[in-house]
Length: 66
Image (cartoon, rainbow, N blue to C red; front, side):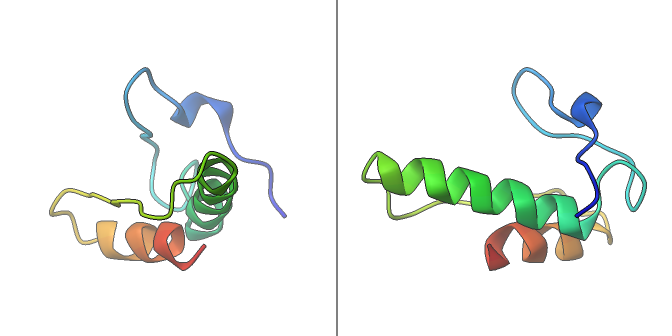
């Protein structure tokens, strides 16, 4: 797995350059990590949001697939 660029993590969100610092693979890994952490705390639902850019669909799909 390609390492996740630490600079994509901001105070309140995750932002990166599509297919450079924010890849579909990175979105999936982040989704898996959040899901693991959530399950450990009894959370069984997550909401994945995005803006209207064309690249958002693939990033959302990666995060939700996890």
